[in-house]
Length: 115
Length: 115
Image 1 (tube, each protein chain N blue to C red):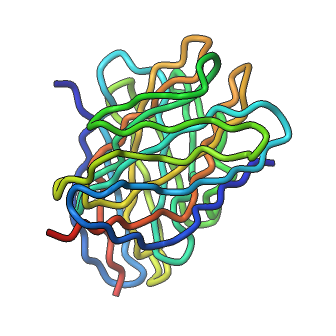
Image 2: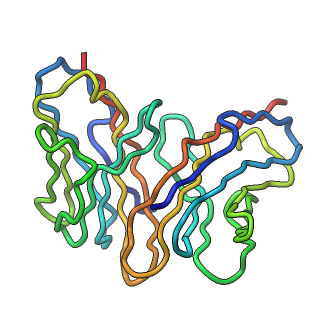
Image 3: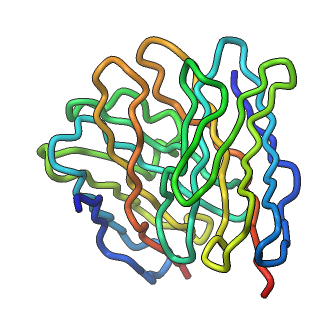
């Protein structure tokens, strides 16, 4: 079974500061990993995903994440926070290969950006 | 810009009433997912359809919840009778499964309050 742990339910940064949102996963097989963002009163939007290949994945809005198998981590980063980045972020894992469809989501991390 | 649409966006009802939520997946997508989001449980998968066939509804309380896809452009989630513990945001997502890990595109959600 897969599971996802997001360390820190709430992260607060200043505008222009580094954003680091942590995600660790557990999977018995090579996983597919995803980061989604949810703005208030909206659905989830895919930021980026890792399936195979390059372990550093670039997504939308300047975000990127690195798959580290040895650490079972997939942390999300952005060099410089913008006010518009304030939202809730969800890490998700899915079993790799075949037609495995089930996404297991973390509990989410609420990002606050202070002016 | 193709989007998943959900109706209604908000629903307030009394315990015991029937609730029907509707979802229009993105045209051409062949997978549909229903999720429930609560503060306590986070995002939970309720049901999964591929090519209109229900493949997984293990996340749904069977006695009161039902999900259907009458046609490729409409998915429904019904609760009968509704209970206060069903209060949550219900998301529909659609994707195109073609042998790889499809991206799930989320609708804006239906916010349900059962009194």
